[in-house]
Length: 153
Image 1 (tube, rainbow, N blue to C red):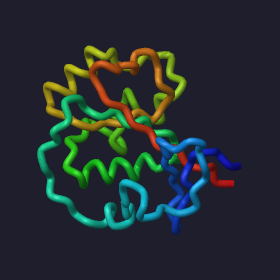
Image 2: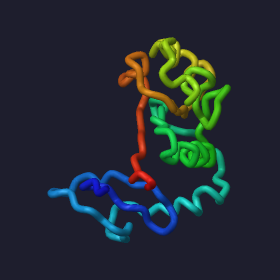
Image 3: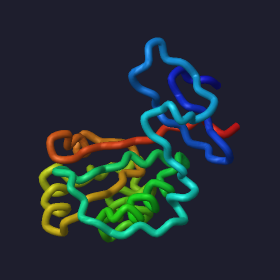
């Protein structure tokens, strides 16, 4: 199916990026050099980056949609020098934020608990690979990111 405003997969990569700032939204078949950025994901996953100090004020929580490149994002975060929450499974705080805790009747950690844990350990990155619960809505304390892609038929 087609989603207006999404960039279709290029080369063998099956990821999409939401294109902002265009009216009306249009489907783009290739990433072109006139976009304000150019990213070679294959190079980023194989190249070793020097770990640097992450200067964001708030840690980043990636909404890891199952089977939608969350593991790729975990690898990219590690290579970019992010301090990943631990213990983790593919950057998902284990056991609270892993796929195994999907539909669990137990609530995730509160915003206060999550922030205290990240702050005391100087973590800058984590992922949540389950449904978002009200206890995950820590908008004041964390930045959030997500990647959408077209379904594989």
